[in-house]
Length: 344
Image (cartoon, rainbow, N blue to C red; front, side):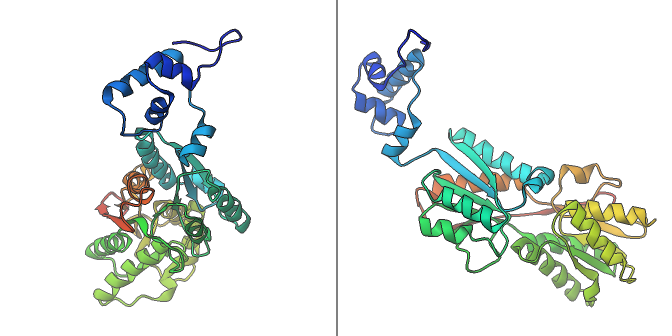
């Protein structure tokens, strides 16, 4: 492969064309992925590029094609949550695997405050990316509407809680069905005073998991004392604080459904500190099926959601459907299942 150096000229498009024996326009079409080039010509151009060590000028290519080959993934949570919650790591793994196959770049950012949302919205609306993936949306999130106005293709990970947030393309989890499975399992164990640590109720996942809990309790003829429902924030610390509040009511639940594994682990820490045995005194079920759930003491019974697949489906939906607008709207719903371990 030819290398550039102090005495060697950087390879140009014209040099590639000359080496491949084709015109400059043909080389451009090959680089930009046009189908209007024969396989033999495409092979010759790629061989010339490899021999010369040619690297296309991405800025110039963007001006011509209006494509950046970059996809943004925006996590609407504080930066420290991105690195502490395995849910986000699995989403990133799934998204990255698809983008790598398509030779696309991933831009990862977080935004939770009003100022951060404005900064990210300004950047994404400025033709710096081909599309965006939005996850962990709260009801006060302005990005959906902002990017919709700017014409930026967007796929949501989870349906937005606010009806004002446009979401024609979405990949979601069956949150209601997962919560129902968790509560049915606890009732089948003989539990009757089942408490719930909910997720944030300004997020659709939090609202739907609470709905699944209430539906099964009502169907079983079990009245839920409102003091048995405590809101958390999907974090370990939030789960611990919620469990403290729950135990402070004096109602003595015999089971707790936590709407995320992270909250369940925080709650487990509090139960053990209080001298309560899990599951003998209090059964505990989480939601996510993270690696941490397998290695807790005792191992956590939980609802498995296919988080890596969710990231893959989000990337596929954006690249194959939302950006080329092959359909005006599409929602992908992914199923869940119960994983029984020792905590409940």
